[in-house]
Image (cartoon, rainbow, N blue to C red; front, top):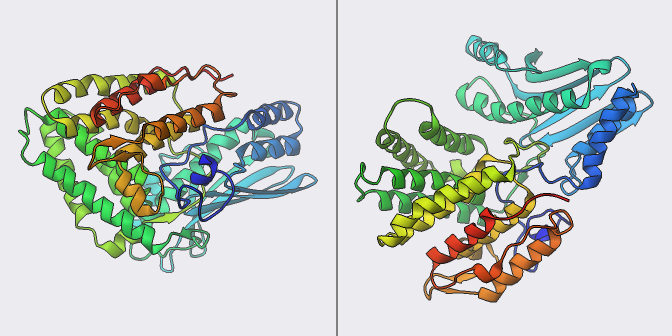
Length: 440
């Protein structure tokens, strides 16, 4: 059922639980064993100097069958490929001598010195690819001799090309009026009703967070304020799933806090608040332009060992205790949410963890999901009542679906508390902290 709910299975506009809607960032940390084996095949074939066959296996590994993100054809020693990364399509060819790939960023009808200066500066930060001009077409390119195109080089080279291209096309067009958007016809628009809900909750969550922060002592509650602001970023990133400039603005706000400088947290909090006020003032039509659906091939973040996830959850839950015990339940809930949402934002997580996180968010934000058209609400905030058996059944369903890959993962539903939202959130994330995620 969740395959349909998250659009990981068949493509349908409706499921038994509600509409098919994408949430969060794409993760490529969920390849089945057969796909993982294709990487091994690609590596072995490359070592045997069977280069076309190695490339076959590599693109088979790269293909996510649930989203059909890769198109690949080969005739003898020659072939072509395409794959999707957000708002961009990477296109390439290969033969016996070389493999080449490129992504179109924008059109530049008139030469622009500022644009070329920007590209020259950015070239220094690229390891495998480079910016290029083809008449009035601004693009990025990657190429390699076929004999040097190992699976690792292809993976990191094409990943750099795809992820940088997907990010820079929006930023360049945004910053330079001389550039024109191009090659994004594959982007899927989302229904206006979905945009309306997401815009309304973007406004609601920012406003509520700023209202919560306003009366707090900026010094004594600096840590709590930081948790609230950062957690807001991660919630918007997952629930609203923005693209383009809106996504870039959220990343800039995150960078304010995590930049390694000597500034006190109070100053960083102040600057983050000001940036959120700017987002709050962003016109509705502009926000709508950053709400669309795309297919991806590479995650923009890297996987981590589960111990790193556990430590993040543990640290947040330790820090929420004082706020829970001193009658700040709303802040306590947000700090608990921060622990797991930080991981969802920062790492490429196993899909089973994302499914549990999604259930957690459905419990905490039922009005949002109901507004989007979902039929299942696991918590009634007015009566403060949980659909206990529904939550337990969903957890068991998720575990059963993944028991072959994670046979020792044991989410102990008997440890969940349903007497308050604070205690539910704490016990739910405690169970996530101690999951044994050793794959089979």
